[in-house]
Length: 191
Image: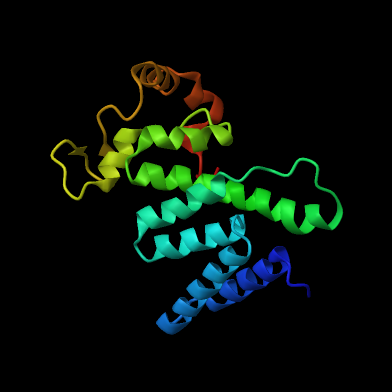
């Protein structure tokens, strides 16, 4: 094995991943040291950055985790890579950047930084997202703005836009062809 940054960096990623599988606290610190050594050897190692983001997030350090994910998501793809470099560096980096982008979008929603999350959602060509009103409700411990009905249903004011609400009400109205064409009333019953 050569001592070039990529080879040594990959070794540290492998070691840190193994050490962080349900680690006791001393092994967690060992894993952190390996990740840090990986970044010293290969500064922009997206896989290491994602693993550090995971480590921070899983231990309640959300802003720090988000910082690592953001760094990984900022990596550019390798467009002219071929051979072993494509297989061992470019493809894993592309997958890590995608995971980091996903985690940025998710965490920014959880942190109620909805506008910042849009950049990451657009990378996946999403056309819809869970309403900020839903995220805010999920993040609240107790709320007086919620009306509950019998059962596990919660109604959230403004969870969908008015045009979408109008469309949904039409699509699922009692007169809608949906019920007849799907034979919804008989689903799950023996005939």
